[in-house]
Length: 355
Image (cartoon, rainbow, N blue to C red; front, side):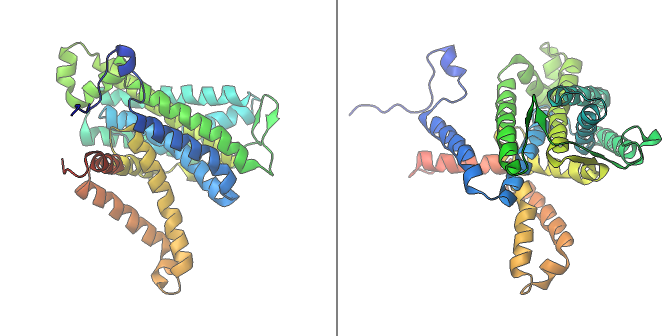
């Protein structure tokens, strides 16, 4: 009987560097791309708007996971960094007439710079101390955008109206608003996810993981801790700034209520539930945590008469279930949805064996 090859083997560096190594992975990739193509044709505008919101959340969650999951630097300032990206792009576009593409790039750069500034304490602090330091960034940024000293941000209006997206003469139409935005967001999200995945196949990405696993040993073998940590803050904040700029142009309004501490906690929950240190986990977590409140509202509408507490105390129920989900994952599967998916694949791959 001929022997059957098992495992994944590489005969060249080119083969090893491929993003996909097996036929099953190529099949899943093709299925995912096919799903992305089909979505705008099968969903109505309501559900497509939810999908668009999820795509933006995926970008922000991937950025946060680069910092927290891969570099081990906890951050509670994502809501503030979203605000920096949103306000920067909106102000440049509406007040100074900067083209949208340039304003979005400027928002990414500005947010990365702010991330580096607030990441400086990370050179000395770890764990809960760093969490408090990044929480300060959230409080400071939220205070500035909420109080708007001198009216520089909103000129006293309290918000910024953003004009309909116009890219090089191509303008989003109201009749196909969600479909056109889906195309834009899907392309940007795919590029952002692929870029993040490739980042950790480079020396810079590996230095992030070395800092996370053992920073003293990493420094001993030549990793520049200052460069690695500040670069991680810059890259992570840049991703979040991109998400913030997209929020501004998609919703066509920027106000401080969208960038509170609750938003920072929600993004942290996304990567905890999805799986720390996993790009795919950030995607799964963003999808799951974005759909959770939608599913709760749907349940309240359908079963509110039978279970009055669902309808009468909907915000409290949402918060309770939100916390329960986080606790459940921390207790029963700390590695999140990414690990559950991996276990499911292993079960199918090794069936009928149990190892």
